[in-house]
Length: 145
Image 1 (cartoon, helix red, strand yellow):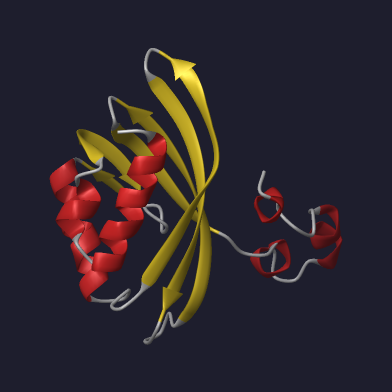
Image 2 (tube, helix red, strand yellow; image 1 turned 90 degrees about the vertical axis):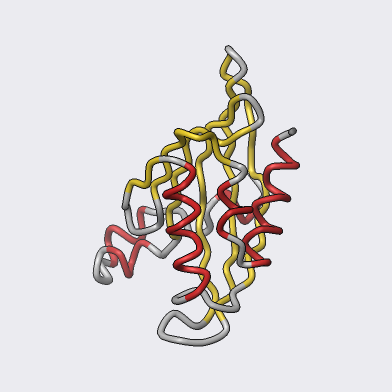
């Protein structure tokens, strides 16, 4: 399965709210760092935890995934970066959330995945205007890099 096929399958599984289908894209012993920094190990754990969020905080959500970059690392490994937009229809997280992911793909499966929610530097630094002024105004993903 090519990287593009994995990305399509992940998006399809999320939008079907199917934790098993989501996890099927991962190696049996994959490591998954979620958006709040929890390390989930193994396909079964990824399936269970994904289904949990599909049924609760992200109920009815839709996900769009776009590949930002991919490069071979040798030995059959590819480093892949994606960007996502998650639309959440209701609840305390209602609205739109953007994130970026780093995936290590080997043998047609994701072996490592790290998810990072996007935010602006001013909010992160509690509105430190000096620090915010040093950060790029638009991250490279908006330009498709």
